[in-house]
Amino acid sequence: MNILVRLCTLLGAMLLSACVYAGDIQVEGAWARATAPGQSTGMVDLAITSLKGAKLVGFSSPACKSAQMHSMSHDNGMMEMREVQAIELPAGKRIVLGNAGYHLMLIDLLAPLKAGDSVPLTLNIRVGGKEEKVAIVAEVKPLTAPMDEHMQHMHH
Image (cartoon, rainbow, N blue to C red; front, side, top):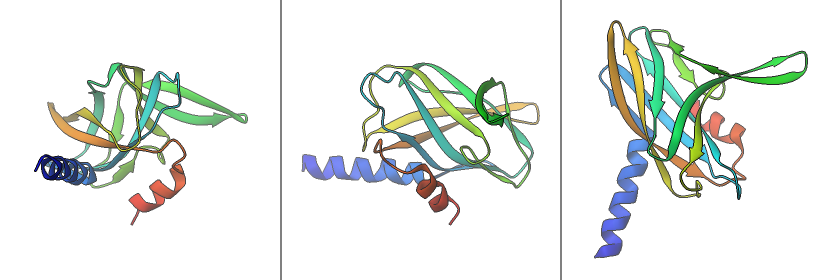
């Protein structure tokens, strides 16, 4: 019976991570790569669609001491990563963090991210003058999981 309860809990978490709707906001495909030994940071990618113009203004997770949103860009052949205070979510446009040059950073992880685990996150999204909190779960994939394959899957 205990195995059945665990299996149902795992399936429920996987369904939640697949697609979450909160009002006019849809979040799907949240995932993180497992961490290597000694690694103290992790990265989460996901896709967000807001029916109304909105901004992702922050996030938190009990899995880490600090959470930051970053942009990545190439400048003169060098990859630059910078913290950003907000990520624009144009009305009706699906923004895929990872492909769009943005990602969520988990800083000072409290425990390693292991394949098969999940990471709870709370996204802070500002729609108009109101801030909404959206609870999601990111699936932790193996350290060797190819990012491109996952991103292609999110587009189907």
